[in-house]
Amino acid sequence: MLRALTAAEMRSADRATIEERGIPSLVLMENAAQAVARKLGEEIPTMGAEKAVVLCGKGNNGGDGLALARQLLQIWPRLDLTVAVFAERAALSKDARANWDMLAAQDFRAETVVSEADWAALLPRVGDSTVVVDAMLGTGTRGPAKGLPAQVIGDVNAGFRSAKVMAVDMPSGLGSDSSEIPGPAMRADLTVTFTAPKVSQVIGPTCERVGNLSVARIGTADSVIEALPGPRLLLNEPADVAEYAATRDRSSHKGSYGHVLAIGGSASKPGAILMASTAALRAGAGLVTVVAPSGAADGIIGTTPELMLEPAGALADGTLGPASLDARMYEGKTVVAIGPGIGRSEANEALVRKVAEECSLPLVIDADGLAAVKGVNLGGRPAPTVLTPHPGEMGRLLDRASAQIQRDRIGAARALAAATGSYAVLKGDRSLIAAPTGDVVVNPTGTPGMATAGSGDILTGMVSALLAQFPQRPVLHTVAAAVYLHGLAGEAAAGSLGEQGMLATDIARHLAAAFETVRA
Image (cartoon, rainbow, N blue to C red):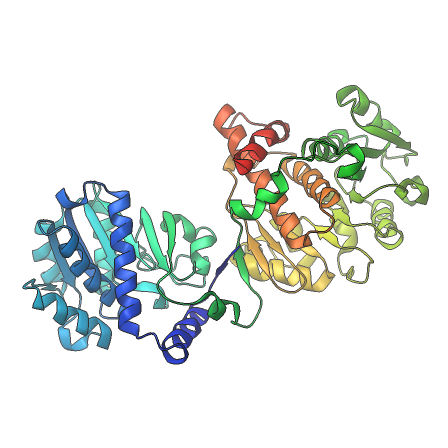
Protein backbone atom coordinates (compact mmCIF):
# COMPACT_ATOMS: atom_id res chain seq x y z
CA MET A 1 0.00 0.00 0.00
CA LEU A 2 1.18 3.50 -0.79
CA ARG A 3 1.64 5.74 2.21
CA ALA A 4 0.06 9.19 1.93
CA LEU A 5 1.93 11.94 3.74
CA THR A 6 1.01 15.13 5.54
CA ALA A 7 2.88 18.33 4.73
CA ALA A 8 4.97 17.90 7.91
CA GLU A 9 5.84 14.30 7.02
CA MET A 10 6.84 15.37 3.52
CA ARG A 11 9.10 18.08 4.91
CA SER A 12 10.72 15.53 7.21
CA ALA A 13 11.29 13.14 4.30
CA ASP A 14 12.80 15.91 2.17
CA ARG A 15 15.05 17.03 5.02
CA ALA A 16 16.28 13.48 5.62
CA THR A 17 16.93 13.00 1.90
CA ILE A 18 18.89 16.23 1.56
CA GLU A 19 20.68 16.50 4.90
CA GLU A 20 21.16 12.88 5.94
CA ARG A 21 21.32 11.06 2.60
CA GLY A 22 23.24 13.82 0.83
CA ILE A 23 21.07 14.28 -2.25
CA PRO A 24 21.10 18.01 -3.15
CA SER A 25 17.74 19.76 -3.38
CA LEU A 26 18.53 20.88 -6.94
CA VAL A 27 18.94 17.24 -7.95
CA LEU A 28 15.54 16.41 -6.48
CA MET A 29 14.07 19.39 -8.37
CA GLU A 30 15.65 18.25 -11.63
CA ASN A 31 14.36 14.71 -11.12
CA ALA A 32 10.88 16.12 -10.47
CA ALA A 33 10.98 18.17 -13.65
CA GLN A 34 12.08 15.18 -15.70
CA ALA A 35 9.27 13.08 -14.25
CA VAL A 36 6.64 15.70 -15.15
CA ALA A 37 8.07 16.08 -18.66
CA ARG A 38 7.90 12.31 -19.19
CA LYS A 39 4.31 12.24 -17.99
CA LEU A 40 3.33 15.07 -20.31
CA GLY A 41 4.84 13.14 -23.21
CA GLU A 42 2.92 10.00 -22.23
CA GLU A 43 -0.39 11.80 -21.74
CA ILE A 44 -0.11 14.11 -24.75
CA PRO A 45 1.58 12.35 -27.69
CA THR A 46 1.32 15.59 -29.73
CA MET A 47 3.06 17.62 -27.02
CA GLY A 48 5.61 19.11 -29.41
CA ALA A 49 2.82 20.63 -31.48
CA GLU A 50 0.82 22.05 -28.55
CA LYS A 51 0.67 25.57 -27.15
CA ALA A 52 1.75 25.44 -23.50
CA VAL A 53 2.01 27.83 -20.56
CA VAL A 54 3.83 27.05 -17.31
CA LEU A 55 2.60 29.05 -14.30
CA CYS A 56 5.34 29.38 -11.64
CA GLY A 57 5.16 30.70 -8.09
CA LYS A 58 8.05 32.09 -6.07
CA GLY A 59 8.74 28.96 -3.99
CA ASN A 60 10.15 25.56 -4.81
CA ASN A 61 6.98 24.57 -6.64
CA GLY A 62 7.76 27.40 -9.02
CA GLY A 63 11.32 26.10 -9.17
CA ASP A 64 9.94 22.76 -10.34
CA GLY A 65 8.03 24.63 -13.05
CA LEU A 66 11.11 26.56 -14.20
CA ALA A 67 13.16 23.34 -14.33
CA LEU A 68 10.32 21.71 -16.25
CA ALA A 69 10.37 24.52 -18.81
CA ARG A 70 14.01 23.71 -19.56
CA GLN A 71 13.17 20.04 -19.95
CA LEU A 72 10.29 20.82 -22.31
CA LEU A 73 12.50 22.99 -24.51
CA GLN A 74 15.15 20.27 -24.66
CA ILE A 75 12.67 17.57 -25.63
CA TRP A 76 10.48 19.71 -27.92
CA PRO A 77 12.64 22.63 -29.15
CA ARG A 78 9.83 24.01 -31.34
CA LEU A 79 7.21 23.93 -28.58
CA ASP A 80 5.12 27.12 -28.39
CA LEU A 81 5.91 27.78 -24.72
CA THR A 82 5.24 30.67 -22.35
CA VAL A 83 6.55 30.70 -18.76
CA ALA A 84 4.83 33.08 -16.35
CA VAL A 85 6.59 33.70 -13.02
CA PHE A 86 4.46 35.40 -10.36
CA ALA A 87 7.36 37.11 -8.57
CA GLU A 88 10.45 39.16 -9.27
CA ARG A 89 13.66 37.14 -9.58
CA ALA A 90 14.97 38.46 -6.25
CA ALA A 91 11.89 37.15 -4.43
CA LEU A 92 12.29 33.57 -5.67
CA SER A 93 13.50 30.75 -3.43
CA LYS A 94 17.16 29.81 -3.82
CA ASP A 95 16.49 26.76 -6.00
CA ALA A 96 13.81 28.54 -8.05
CA ARG A 97 16.22 31.40 -8.69
CA ALA A 98 18.89 28.94 -9.85
CA ASN A 99 16.45 27.45 -12.34
CA TRP A 100 15.38 30.92 -13.51
CA ASP A 101 19.05 31.63 -14.31
CA MET A 102 19.56 28.28 -16.07
CA LEU A 103 16.46 28.90 -18.19
CA ALA A 104 17.75 32.38 -19.09
CA ALA A 105 21.08 30.83 -20.04
CA GLN A 106 19.21 28.94 -22.76
CA ASP A 107 18.13 32.30 -24.21
CA PHE A 108 14.58 31.84 -23.00
CA ARG A 109 12.85 34.76 -21.30
CA ALA A 110 10.27 34.04 -18.63
CA GLU A 111 7.46 36.57 -18.17
CA THR A 112 7.40 38.34 -14.80
CA VAL A 113 3.80 38.77 -13.60
CA VAL A 114 3.45 40.66 -10.32
CA SER A 115 0.14 42.48 -10.71
CA GLU A 116 -3.33 41.91 -12.05
CA ALA A 117 -2.46 44.34 -14.85
CA ASP A 118 0.53 42.18 -15.83
CA TRP A 119 -1.70 39.12 -15.89
CA ALA A 120 -4.40 40.92 -17.90
CA ALA A 121 -1.76 41.89 -20.46
CA LEU A 122 -0.44 38.32 -20.72
CA LEU A 123 -3.84 36.61 -20.78
CA PRO A 124 -4.61 37.24 -24.48
CA ARG A 125 -1.34 35.48 -25.38
CA VAL A 126 -1.90 32.39 -23.25
CA GLY A 127 -5.69 32.13 -23.06
CA ASP A 128 -5.85 29.72 -25.99
CA SER A 129 -3.15 27.40 -24.60
CA THR A 130 -3.86 23.71 -25.01
CA VAL A 131 -1.60 22.69 -22.10
CA VAL A 132 -1.45 24.49 -18.74
CA VAL A 133 1.15 23.47 -16.16
CA ASP A 134 0.27 24.65 -12.65
CA ALA A 135 3.41 25.17 -10.53
CA MET A 136 2.23 28.18 -8.53
CA LEU A 137 1.56 27.23 -4.91
CA GLY A 138 2.42 23.55 -4.33
CA THR A 139 2.03 21.58 -1.12
CA GLY A 140 2.89 24.39 1.29
CA THR A 141 -0.44 26.20 0.93
CA ARG A 142 -2.05 27.30 4.19
CA GLY A 143 -5.49 28.89 4.02
CA PRO A 144 -7.28 30.05 0.87
CA ALA A 145 -5.51 31.39 -2.19
CA LYS A 146 -5.80 35.18 -2.33
CA GLY A 147 -4.91 38.08 -4.57
CA LEU A 148 -3.25 37.39 -7.91
CA PRO A 149 -2.96 33.59 -7.49
CA ALA A 150 -6.70 33.41 -6.78
CA GLN A 151 -7.36 35.50 -9.91
CA VAL A 152 -5.20 33.20 -12.05
CA ILE A 153 -6.83 30.07 -10.65
CA GLY A 154 -10.28 31.46 -11.40
CA ASP A 155 -9.33 32.47 -14.94
CA VAL A 156 -7.81 29.07 -15.77
CA ASN A 157 -10.76 27.14 -14.31
CA ALA A 158 -13.30 29.30 -16.14
CA GLY A 159 -11.56 30.31 -19.36
CA PHE A 160 -9.02 27.70 -20.45
CA ARG A 161 -11.72 25.25 -21.47
CA SER A 162 -9.79 23.54 -24.27
CA ALA A 163 -6.63 23.10 -22.19
CA LYS A 164 -5.35 20.02 -20.40
CA VAL A 165 -4.28 21.16 -16.93
CA MET A 166 -1.40 19.36 -15.23
CA ALA A 167 -0.59 20.24 -11.62
CA VAL A 168 2.97 19.91 -10.37
CA ASP A 169 2.88 18.19 -6.94
CA MET A 170 -0.45 19.80 -5.91
CA PRO A 171 -3.20 21.80 -7.63
CA SER A 172 -2.76 25.40 -6.49
CA GLY A 173 -5.12 26.39 -3.69
CA LEU A 174 -5.37 22.96 -2.06
CA GLY A 175 -3.67 22.23 1.24
CA SER A 176 -1.84 18.96 1.76
CA ASP A 177 -3.59 17.81 4.92
CA SER A 178 -7.27 18.76 4.76
CA SER A 179 -10.23 17.32 2.90
CA GLU A 180 -11.79 20.78 2.75
CA ILE A 181 -11.29 23.11 -0.22
CA PRO A 182 -10.38 26.37 1.54
CA GLY A 183 -11.03 28.72 -1.38
CA PRO A 184 -10.19 29.05 -5.08
CA ALA A 185 -8.42 25.87 -6.19
CA MET A 186 -7.13 24.73 -9.56
CA ARG A 187 -9.11 21.96 -11.21
CA ALA A 188 -6.46 19.67 -12.68
CA ASP A 189 -6.88 16.90 -15.22
CA LEU A 190 -3.69 15.27 -13.98
CA THR A 191 -1.44 15.78 -10.98
CA VAL A 192 2.12 14.49 -10.76
CA THR A 193 3.06 14.45 -7.10
CA PHE A 194 6.49 13.58 -5.77
CA THR A 195 7.70 10.77 -3.51
CA ALA A 196 4.26 9.91 -2.06
CA PRO A 197 0.61 10.94 -2.33
CA LYS A 198 -0.49 13.74 -0.02
CA VAL A 199 -3.49 13.35 2.31
CA SER A 200 -5.77 15.73 0.41
CA GLN A 201 -5.04 13.91 -2.85
CA VAL A 202 -6.53 10.62 -1.68
CA ILE A 203 -9.61 11.75 0.27
CA GLY A 204 -12.69 13.62 -0.90
CA PRO A 205 -13.78 16.09 -1.93
CA THR A 206 -10.28 17.51 -2.47
CA CYS A 207 -9.20 14.48 -4.50
CA GLU A 208 -11.73 15.53 -7.15
CA ARG A 209 -9.57 18.60 -7.95
CA VAL A 210 -6.49 16.42 -8.47
CA GLY A 211 -7.70 14.53 -11.55
CA ASN A 212 -5.69 11.42 -12.34
CA LEU A 213 -2.95 11.13 -9.73
CA SER A 214 0.55 9.96 -10.65
CA VAL A 215 3.29 9.48 -8.05
CA ALA A 216 6.86 10.10 -9.24
CA ARG A 217 9.91 8.84 -7.37
CA ILE A 218 12.54 11.59 -7.43
CA GLY A 219 15.25 10.27 -5.10
CA THR A 220 13.83 9.70 -1.62
CA ALA A 221 14.47 6.12 -0.48
CA ASP A 222 11.67 3.85 0.73
CA SER A 223 13.48 3.51 4.05
CA VAL A 224 13.11 7.26 4.64
CA ILE A 225 9.34 7.00 4.28
CA GLU A 226 9.19 3.85 6.40
CA ALA A 227 11.12 5.58 9.20
CA LEU A 228 8.58 8.38 9.57
CA PRO A 229 6.95 8.08 13.00
CA GLY A 230 3.28 7.98 13.89
CA PRO A 231 0.20 6.25 12.48
CA ARG A 232 0.07 5.86 8.72
CA LEU A 233 -2.48 6.81 6.09
CA LEU A 234 -2.35 4.18 3.34
CA LEU A 235 -3.91 4.00 -0.11
CA ASN A 236 -5.48 0.70 -1.18
CA GLU A 237 -4.30 -0.43 -4.63
CA PRO A 238 -5.15 -3.36 -6.93
CA ALA A 239 -1.88 -5.13 -6.11
CA ASP A 240 -2.86 -5.15 -2.42
CA VAL A 241 -6.07 -7.02 -3.25
CA ALA A 242 -4.78 -9.46 -5.88
CA GLU A 243 -3.99 -12.17 -3.34
CA TYR A 244 -7.64 -12.25 -2.27
CA ALA A 245 -8.71 -13.00 -5.84
CA ALA A 246 -6.06 -15.61 -6.63
CA THR A 247 -7.01 -18.79 -8.45
CA ARG A 248 -8.04 -21.51 -6.02
CA ASP A 249 -6.23 -24.80 -5.45
CA ARG A 250 -7.90 -27.55 -7.45
CA SER A 251 -7.85 -29.88 -4.44
CA SER A 252 -9.73 -27.42 -2.17
CA HIS A 253 -13.28 -27.96 -0.96
CA LYS A 254 -16.00 -25.92 0.75
CA GLY A 255 -14.40 -26.53 4.14
CA SER A 256 -11.25 -24.79 2.88
CA TYR A 257 -12.99 -21.42 2.71
CA GLY A 258 -14.53 -20.95 6.11
CA HIS A 259 -18.01 -21.00 7.58
CA VAL A 260 -19.79 -17.68 8.26
CA LEU A 261 -22.53 -17.44 10.88
CA ALA A 262 -24.81 -14.51 9.99
CA ILE A 263 -27.16 -13.32 12.75
CA GLY A 264 -29.92 -10.78 12.10
CA GLY A 265 -33.15 -10.03 10.37
CA SER A 266 -36.56 -9.20 11.79
CA ALA A 267 -40.17 -9.27 10.69
CA SER A 268 -39.88 -5.72 9.32
CA LYS A 269 -36.37 -6.11 7.82
CA PRO A 270 -36.09 -9.67 6.52
CA GLY A 271 -33.98 -8.73 3.50
CA ALA A 272 -30.98 -7.27 5.33
CA ILE A 273 -29.61 -10.55 6.69
CA LEU A 274 -30.45 -12.29 3.41
CA MET A 275 -28.35 -9.77 1.47
CA ALA A 276 -25.44 -10.05 3.92
CA SER A 277 -25.43 -13.84 3.90
CA THR A 278 -25.83 -14.10 0.12
CA ALA A 279 -22.95 -11.66 -0.34
CA ALA A 280 -20.81 -13.84 1.93
CA LEU A 281 -21.40 -16.74 -0.45
CA ARG A 282 -20.73 -14.58 -3.51
CA ALA A 283 -17.48 -13.39 -1.92
CA GLY A 284 -16.28 -16.97 -1.59
CA ALA A 285 -17.20 -18.27 1.85
CA GLY A 286 -17.47 -22.06 1.72
CA LEU A 287 -20.50 -22.25 4.00
CA VAL A 288 -22.94 -19.70 5.41
CA THR A 289 -25.47 -20.35 8.15
CA VAL A 290 -28.17 -17.78 8.91
CA VAL A 291 -29.71 -17.26 12.33
CA ALA A 292 -32.94 -15.30 11.92
CA PRO A 293 -36.26 -15.05 13.75
CA SER A 294 -38.97 -17.27 12.35
CA GLY A 295 -40.80 -14.36 10.70
CA ALA A 296 -37.71 -13.38 8.73
CA ALA A 297 -36.49 -16.90 8.03
CA ASP A 298 -39.43 -18.06 5.96
CA GLY A 299 -38.21 -16.74 2.61
CA ILE A 300 -34.45 -17.18 3.01
CA ILE A 301 -34.02 -20.71 1.73
CA GLY A 302 -36.50 -20.18 -1.08
CA THR A 303 -34.50 -17.18 -2.25
CA THR A 304 -30.97 -18.58 -1.79
CA PRO A 305 -31.08 -22.36 -1.37
CA GLU A 306 -27.28 -22.51 -0.86
CA LEU A 307 -27.71 -20.96 2.61
CA MET A 308 -28.22 -23.02 5.75
CA LEU A 309 -30.76 -21.84 8.27
CA GLU A 310 -31.05 -21.85 12.07
CA PRO A 311 -34.53 -20.48 12.83
CA ALA A 312 -34.64 -18.77 16.23
CA GLY A 313 -37.40 -17.74 18.54
CA ALA A 314 -38.69 -14.22 18.00
CA LEU A 315 -39.76 -11.58 20.47
CA ALA A 316 -43.22 -10.07 20.24
CA ASP A 317 -41.94 -7.41 17.82
CA GLY A 318 -40.53 -10.02 15.45
CA THR A 319 -36.87 -9.50 16.40
CA LEU A 320 -34.18 -11.59 18.08
CA GLY A 321 -33.39 -11.30 21.78
CA PRO A 322 -30.69 -12.69 24.12
CA ALA A 323 -32.57 -15.93 24.60
CA SER A 324 -32.72 -16.56 20.85
CA LEU A 325 -29.15 -17.84 20.65
CA ASP A 326 -27.59 -21.08 21.75
CA ALA A 327 -23.79 -21.09 22.22
CA ARG A 328 -23.67 -24.33 20.24
CA MET A 329 -24.42 -22.26 17.12
CA TYR A 330 -20.79 -21.08 17.11
CA GLU A 331 -19.43 -24.62 16.83
CA GLY A 332 -17.66 -25.25 13.53
CA LYS A 333 -17.96 -21.63 12.46
CA THR A 334 -15.09 -19.37 11.40
CA VAL A 335 -16.52 -15.83 11.55
CA VAL A 336 -19.70 -14.29 12.98
CA ALA A 337 -21.57 -11.35 11.42
CA ILE A 338 -24.35 -9.67 13.35
CA GLY A 339 -26.56 -6.63 12.97
CA PRO A 340 -28.27 -6.38 9.56
CA GLY A 341 -31.99 -6.00 10.16
CA ILE A 342 -31.73 -7.06 13.81
CA GLY A 343 -33.79 -4.14 15.17
CA ARG A 344 -33.22 -1.38 17.69
CA SER A 345 -34.38 -2.19 21.21
CA GLU A 346 -32.81 -2.95 24.58
CA ALA A 347 -33.34 -6.66 23.93
CA ASN A 348 -31.67 -6.48 20.51
CA GLU A 349 -28.71 -4.60 21.96
CA ALA A 350 -28.42 -7.10 24.78
CA LEU A 351 -28.23 -9.87 22.17
CA VAL A 352 -25.35 -8.17 20.36
CA ARG A 353 -23.43 -7.59 23.60
CA LYS A 354 -24.00 -11.23 24.56
CA VAL A 355 -22.49 -12.39 21.26
CA ALA A 356 -19.51 -10.04 21.67
CA GLU A 357 -18.87 -11.42 25.18
CA GLU A 358 -19.46 -15.12 24.54
CA CYS A 359 -18.15 -15.59 21.00
CA SER A 360 -14.41 -16.23 20.59
CA LEU A 361 -14.51 -15.88 16.79
CA PRO A 362 -13.79 -12.84 14.61
CA LEU A 363 -16.90 -10.67 14.75
CA VAL A 364 -18.34 -8.20 12.22
CA ILE A 365 -20.96 -5.79 13.60
CA ASP A 366 -23.06 -3.58 11.34
CA ALA A 367 -26.29 -1.63 11.08
CA ASP A 368 -28.66 -1.99 14.05
CA GLY A 369 -26.02 -3.96 15.95
CA LEU A 370 -23.69 -0.97 16.21
CA ALA A 371 -25.80 0.80 18.82
CA ALA A 372 -25.05 -2.02 21.28
CA VAL A 373 -21.30 -1.38 21.34
CA LYS A 374 -21.30 2.35 22.04
CA GLY A 375 -18.80 2.93 24.82
CA VAL A 376 -17.76 -0.75 24.86
CA ASN A 377 -14.08 -1.61 24.46
CA LEU A 378 -13.89 -4.81 22.43
CA GLY A 379 -10.12 -4.94 22.36
CA GLY A 380 -10.03 -7.66 25.01
CA ARG A 381 -11.91 -10.16 22.87
CA PRO A 382 -9.83 -13.21 21.84
CA ALA A 383 -10.44 -12.41 18.15
CA PRO A 384 -10.72 -9.16 16.21
CA THR A 385 -13.90 -7.14 15.87
CA VAL A 386 -14.86 -5.11 12.79
CA LEU A 387 -17.40 -2.25 12.96
CA THR A 388 -18.86 -0.86 9.71
CA PRO A 389 -20.78 2.40 10.39
CA HIS A 390 -21.93 5.01 7.91
CA PRO A 391 -21.38 8.66 8.97
CA GLY A 392 -24.67 8.88 10.87
CA GLU A 393 -23.94 5.72 12.86
CA MET A 394 -20.35 6.87 13.43
CA GLY A 395 -21.71 10.16 14.78
CA ARG A 396 -23.96 8.37 17.25
CA LEU A 397 -21.11 6.15 18.42
CA LEU A 398 -18.83 9.17 19.00
CA ASP A 399 -21.51 11.66 20.13
CA ARG A 400 -20.80 13.90 17.17
CA ALA A 401 -23.00 15.32 14.44
CA SER A 402 -22.75 13.61 11.08
CA ALA A 403 -21.41 16.87 9.60
CA GLN A 404 -18.56 16.80 12.12
CA ILE A 405 -17.72 13.26 11.10
CA GLN A 406 -17.60 14.27 7.44
CA ARG A 407 -15.31 17.23 8.14
CA ASP A 408 -12.68 14.95 9.71
CA ARG A 409 -13.34 11.44 8.50
CA ILE A 410 -9.81 10.23 9.18
CA GLY A 411 -9.88 11.53 12.74
CA ALA A 412 -13.31 9.99 13.35
CA ALA A 413 -12.29 6.57 12.05
CA ARG A 414 -9.17 6.61 14.22
CA ALA A 415 -11.18 7.73 17.25
CA LEU A 416 -13.70 4.89 16.95
CA ALA A 417 -11.02 2.25 16.38
CA ALA A 418 -9.08 3.49 19.41
CA ALA A 419 -12.14 3.79 21.67
CA THR A 420 -13.47 0.31 20.87
CA GLY A 421 -10.25 -1.60 20.21
CA SER A 422 -11.79 -2.60 16.89
CA TYR A 423 -11.25 -2.20 13.18
CA ALA A 424 -13.58 0.59 12.04
CA VAL A 425 -14.87 1.00 8.49
CA LEU A 426 -16.28 4.48 7.90
CA LYS A 427 -18.39 4.02 4.80
CA GLY A 428 -18.99 6.63 2.12
CA ASP A 429 -17.06 8.23 -0.72
CA ARG A 430 -13.45 7.07 -0.21
CA SER A 431 -14.36 4.68 2.61
CA LEU A 432 -11.79 4.49 5.40
CA ILE A 433 -10.60 1.41 7.28
CA ALA A 434 -8.95 2.20 10.63
CA ALA A 435 -6.96 -0.17 12.86
CA PRO A 436 -6.65 0.15 16.65
CA THR A 437 -2.99 1.11 16.04
CA GLY A 438 -4.12 4.30 14.27
CA ASP A 439 -3.22 3.17 10.75
CA VAL A 440 -5.94 4.06 8.22
CA VAL A 441 -6.46 2.70 4.71
CA VAL A 442 -8.24 4.84 2.11
CA ASN A 443 -10.34 2.96 -0.43
CA PRO A 444 -10.47 4.50 -3.93
CA THR A 445 -13.21 2.35 -5.51
CA GLY A 446 -16.96 2.88 -5.58
CA THR A 447 -19.70 4.90 -7.24
CA PRO A 448 -22.63 7.11 -6.14
CA GLY A 449 -24.90 4.34 -7.40
CA MET A 450 -24.01 2.44 -4.22
CA ALA A 451 -25.95 5.01 -2.18
CA THR A 452 -28.91 2.67 -1.98
CA ALA A 453 -30.54 0.57 0.73
CA GLY A 454 -28.66 -2.63 1.50
CA SER A 455 -25.19 -1.70 0.20
CA GLY A 456 -23.83 -1.88 3.74
CA ASP A 457 -25.38 -5.32 4.27
CA ILE A 458 -23.55 -6.56 1.17
CA LEU A 459 -20.29 -5.21 2.60
CA THR A 460 -20.91 -6.96 5.92
CA GLY A 461 -21.18 -10.29 4.14
CA MET A 462 -18.07 -9.63 2.08
CA VAL A 463 -15.92 -8.64 5.07
CA SER A 464 -17.08 -11.78 6.90
CA ALA A 465 -16.34 -13.99 3.89
CA LEU A 466 -12.78 -12.72 3.38
CA LEU A 467 -12.00 -12.97 7.10
CA ALA A 468 -13.23 -16.57 6.97
CA GLN A 469 -11.09 -17.43 3.93
CA PHE A 470 -7.88 -15.66 4.94
CA PRO A 471 -7.45 -16.05 8.70
CA GLN A 472 -3.66 -15.71 8.51
CA ARG A 473 -3.62 -12.38 6.68
CA PRO A 474 -3.45 -9.07 8.60
CA VAL A 475 -7.01 -8.06 9.50
CA LEU A 476 -6.56 -4.49 8.26
CA HIS A 477 -5.50 -5.74 4.82
CA THR A 478 -8.34 -8.25 4.63
CA VAL A 479 -11.03 -5.74 5.57
CA ALA A 480 -9.52 -3.22 3.14
CA ALA A 481 -9.60 -5.84 0.37
CA ALA A 482 -13.30 -6.48 1.02
CA VAL A 483 -14.06 -2.75 0.84
CA TYR A 484 -12.05 -2.45 -2.38
CA LEU A 485 -13.87 -5.35 -4.05
CA HIS A 486 -17.23 -4.03 -2.80
CA GLY A 487 -16.55 -0.71 -4.53
CA LEU A 488 -15.28 -2.40 -7.67
CA ALA A 489 -18.42 -4.55 -7.88
CA GLY A 490 -20.49 -1.38 -7.45
CA GLU A 491 -18.64 0.21 -10.36
CA ALA A 492 -19.32 -2.86 -12.49
CA ALA A 493 -23.02 -2.80 -11.57
CA ALA A 494 -23.28 0.91 -12.35
CA GLY A 495 -21.54 0.36 -15.68
CA SER A 496 -24.06 -2.31 -16.57
CA LEU A 497 -27.26 -0.83 -15.14
CA GLY A 498 -26.60 2.87 -14.54
CA GLU A 499 -26.15 4.55 -11.17
CA GLN A 500 -29.86 5.29 -10.72
CA GLY A 501 -31.03 1.83 -11.72
CA MET A 502 -28.78 -0.39 -9.63
CA LEU A 503 -29.79 -2.15 -6.40
CA ALA A 504 -27.62 -3.41 -3.57
CA THR A 505 -28.19 -6.98 -4.72
CA ASP A 506 -26.66 -5.98 -8.06
CA ILE A 507 -23.40 -5.33 -6.22
CA ALA A 508 -23.38 -8.95 -5.06
CA ARG A 509 -24.23 -10.14 -8.58
CA HIS A 510 -21.25 -8.25 -10.00
CA LEU A 511 -18.75 -9.58 -7.46
CA ALA A 512 -17.49 -12.14 -9.95
CA ALA A 513 -16.58 -9.30 -12.32
CA ALA A 514 -14.79 -7.47 -9.48
CA PHE A 515 -12.71 -10.54 -8.59
CA GLU A 516 -11.88 -11.08 -12.25
CA THR A 517 -10.77 -7.45 -12.67
CA VAL A 518 -8.38 -7.75 -9.73
CA ARG A 519 -7.17 -11.15 -10.87
CA ALA A 520 -6.44 -9.81 -14.37
